[in-house]
Structures are given as C-alpha cells and as structure tokens.
Image (cartoon, rainbow, N blue to C red):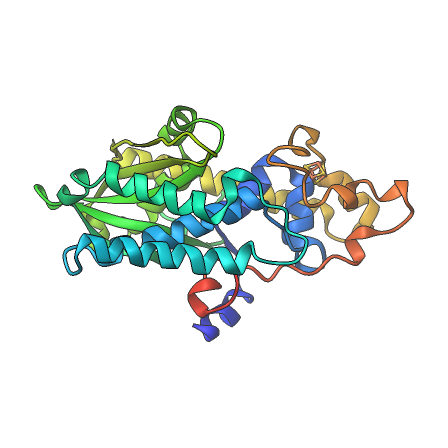
Length: 318
Ligand code: SF4
C-alpha cells in the first residue's frame, strides 16, 4: 500500500474531491492541487463528525450475516467512539451540542432501529472499497482527448439486492441542513455515478446497476434518515466519463496557459469564484487570497497537501 501511495505521487490522478475543487473555484484548485505541489485543505467539525458516523457504519455492515445484530451495533458504537476521540478530543476544540459523543451514539442507535428490517434484504458485498482506474482514450470519447489520467474512488459500500443478485453503490452522507434536500442533490450526483461508472469497468462490476444514497441527519434533538434506490445505465456512465474528460481537459488548458508565467500572472489564469468563499464555513485558502491585507504571504507557510483517498487504508490519518 505504501508503494501505491508513492506511485500515486508520480502520476496525474483525480478524485471526486479534486474535481469538486476545480468546479467550485479555479483559484482554490490552484492552491490545493498545484501551488508547491498543492496546499493542505482542512475540514470543519461537521465533516469530522461524518467521518465518525462512517466508521461506525463500516463496522456495523462488515459483520452482516455473520455476527448478531446487537454485537454489530455495539461494535459500531465503539468504532464511532474511537474516531471521535481521534478527531474531537483535543485541546481547544469547541464542540456543538449536535457533535457530542452521546449524540453521535444516539443517532447511530436510532438509524439502526429504523433500518433493521430493510437491511435484511440488502447484503453488503464490500465496505470501504478503494479502486483506481485509468481513463484512456477510446471510441466515443470527446475529440482531442489523447493523454490518459487516473481516477481514484473510495466507496462506502457495494450492496447486493438479495432477491435479484444486482449490485448497487451504497453511499452515506450526513447533513445538518435537511435530509430531503440532500437526497434531491444526490439524484444527479456525479460522485456516486462516477463510483458506479468506474466499478462497472471491472469484471465483477458489470453487476452494478445503481446507487443507494443513504442520508443521515446530524442535529441535536431531531432524528431523521432516508434512503433511495436509483438505477444507473450505461448512458449515465458514458455521460459521467465524457463530462469528466471535458473537466480535466479544461483544467489542463488552464495549466498550459499558466506555464512559464509569474506567480501573479498564474493567479489571474486561475480565476476566483467568490461565491464559494464562505460555503461550508470559511474557505481554507481565504488568507491566501487575502494576502495583501497583512503583507504576509500566507500560502508560503501553509502545510503541503499529502492527502489521498488511500491514506486511511494505509494507516495514515485521513
Ligand atoms: S477564498 Fe474564495 S476565491 Fe479564494 S480560493 Fe477560496 S473560494 Fe476561491
């Protein structure tokens, strides 16, 4: 695995996170992916709490049909607590009511109760699955696409519908702003479609026929969780592939335009989208964009980006 991480540093690769940065703000993508090899991004408490919930679910579903449900449930609580101690128990970390340890355990407990019956008709095939796939030019691709790139995925799960043997990508999202809204967003979500598209390229992946978005509300008192089952066909996979190629080719054109220019000129090529400066809290790179105010070049002191979706599988912090 460590060799794989070293190899990853030598190739052009993207994942959903990197593409999200490119789509949201070119300047942000420049700071995060290119400047000095990329600067570290940070996440807020909401994302960390989501990581703890994911840790609990991974343990719960990995024991499906082999361990009693009560044992899986307690295993999930313990996994949640371990992640929580790693991410939240540190000096100076302020914790809102909705992000307490007890609230997280309670959210999981109610979620397990709600889906106790439904979970019997779905068989988890894989939990926390990672894959890397090279997108190489082939018939039907956008004209001019000639240089391959790698696409990396990390999927929460692959589930089998027991009655038909069909496979679905299972993707959990935690939200503090409305389960229905998040479910609507995930109906045309490129992340989950991309997971299904990439997995469908592997021999066993031909059984992938759709996506199960699994949305869990993170709130102090209210409890809510919903799922949907959405089918995906080759036409969706082709559309995802072609759109991804267009995004990468656009991004490559910006890099070619900036090549050989001064830092100040490169910043103009990688233009700002200030609509995204305060989405999900203040942008990690706000100080870099606001450098002139203090005279300090914030970007020169920021740590470098070493994160990949494979880090936690290799035992590194994610
Ligand atoms: S602060 Fe705003 S303009 Fe600057 S990188 Fe972040 S989102 Fe883009």
